[in-house]
Amino acid sequence: MPSLARRDFLKNLAGAAAVLSSGLMQAFPATAVAAKRFKLGAISDGFSLDFEQALTLMKGYGLEWVEIRNVWGKYNTEATPDEIRRIKQLLGHHGFRVSVVDTALYKCALPGTKPVSESKDIYPYAGQMDLLKRAAERAHAWGTDKLRIFAFWRVADPQAIMPRVVEELDKAGEAARAAGVRLVIEDEETTNGGTAHELARMIKAVKSPNIGVNWDVGNGYEQGEVSFPDGYNVLPKDRIWHLHVKGMACDSPGKNCREAFADQGVIDLAGQFRALQHDHYTGTMSLECEFQAPGMSHQQTTQRSMEGVLRVLASASA
Image (cartoon, rainbow, N blue to C red):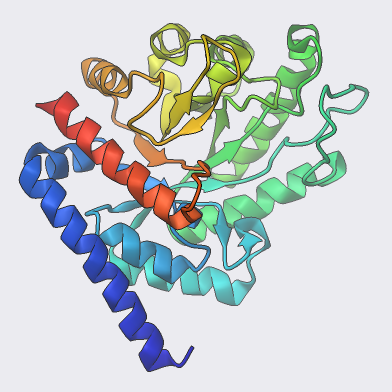
């Protein structure tokens, strides 16, 4: 696309989002204040794999925070030096701060274990510390100190290998400390930290003070956990450093759960926001939308979910 046409395209996108955002702000005056207080952002590739387009759309919703995962069709840890510089430039130009740099750290099999799924290692176990180093370099370039990580592909009995997982987490924590970054473990259902209860046990066991929680309010439902309030209540509140918000729908508690729009389904998102206020949460949060709705693009479902999050935020903050 020619540069002038591209600029017009992005301008039109921003204008459309701004109109919607303006309507939401007028309907719910507390929305703008609440979004800033909660440091609300989104994973950029939910809006677009084109990082500039993603920021343009997100700015239309009044957002100032972004979580970086995939950019221009590749995982950020594979971005070239020129792309790293371009991302930094775009962040400054659009007035965004980075909440978290996503990594696939420990999204692999722990050696000697047998995962219950057939998921392939994103990066081999032998390459994990090099991956952490690359991610830390990007975090420094983009102005954050938080890296999102995991707890190895899930086995049949995660508790049985918990000591080994904790040992590996401490190993990564020491490397991260030396690199000047913090690690946040996500409760991801395909890993050994698939629920808040499992994550709470891990955090209690790790020795590294620079390892915390990336609390996803929906993923625990995949393992039969009621993420809020049950899951949230067991987490150490001072170790929750980042959140993912989404919607989940289940046929019955813990049965056939799948993603939904962020303001629909079984999650008491308003209750979660009120609990965060009560607990004086000061970290960041991102919309993570992977919902596939018939007749809608990924960008459209993300926008619809962001509208829902803003409405819930406003009602919870009223």
